[in-house]
Figure 1 (cartoon, helix red, strand yellow):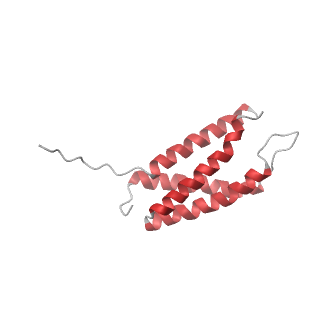
Figure 2 (cartoon, one colour; figure 1 turned 90 degrees about the horizontal axis):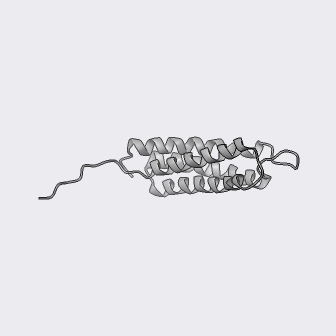
Figure 3 (cartoon, helix red, strand yellow; figure 1 turned 45 degrees about the horizontal axis):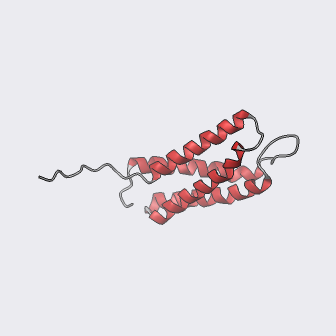
Length: 125
């Protein structure tokens, strides 16, 4: 990935934003019996995943490392997996909408991160 395309740079910026927004998740209140929310264990997992994601995005941006790109994508996928139970528990519909939007954002981010630059295809006679 020595020549990073514009699409890949956009994907890396989106990945950095998504990972960075998960770093302070351990400071947010967890769910209780009276108010729904993510369990504390999920919040404790998302914080280090966010840190790993940010570090991997910075390394992928600066060095073009494919391994760092894969680590960043893996951390985003795991963050998305921790959000999936939001679809199957009794939470307000706006929470389910927020989970759906974040999962679509994650998929778009990963697709952009791994997209190649468009190169003309040679025509063979």
